[in-house]
Length: 277
Image (cartoon, rainbow, N blue to C red; front, top):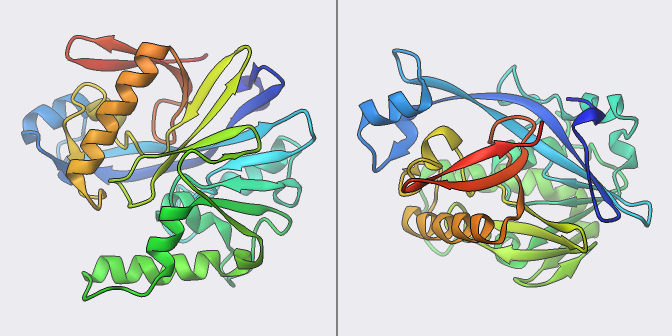
């Protein structure tokens, strides 16, 4: 991914920055017959697919270097963890990042906050996270939790630790750095889209509103096992897809066709992503 993929929106420059690709499977899809999912995703015979993992660098008129999501780090899959080197290739190394907006704190969006020793990869960045997301992951559990959630809570505690003295909670509708936080719970309790409005147009960075684009754009009712609340995630996806298509917003999607910037148009009962080339 290079700076050639950048777009100008008002006084802001938005550049997709690839962290690599994530191997997953259509077995994680909910609410859709397997043959349909396999066909939509062009999965291999075992159901295996890969999806892009993309962060977004937003450079504004005040000299801020804002990163939306922090990538996966190097301990998930060998095909991930490219973000720091990609930033350096753009001339904006991790130390130059002034702010990080998190859509949520799942591993492929937040494990890249720290290195293997637990130190901050972005030593000068303020971390912005929705109030609901921070409260859910940082409070003590209210009862027994499944093992995967216990592991995730422990990992999130480690990921956020070096940033606690520079962590800002942003409520639903709150504004920061030209962005408005839009709470879209379901995938996680505090999953948040970040909307940037300018006189030249608007952009929505939607995190994991869509996780497997080839399936969930054509069939927005299909969920994934990664959703902590599948029904709320479906409702959020329906609302956001309708909004971006109706209002003709640009979309920055973490898991849509690279470079991850484009428009959403209606296609029958579903939608289609039209990337900016």
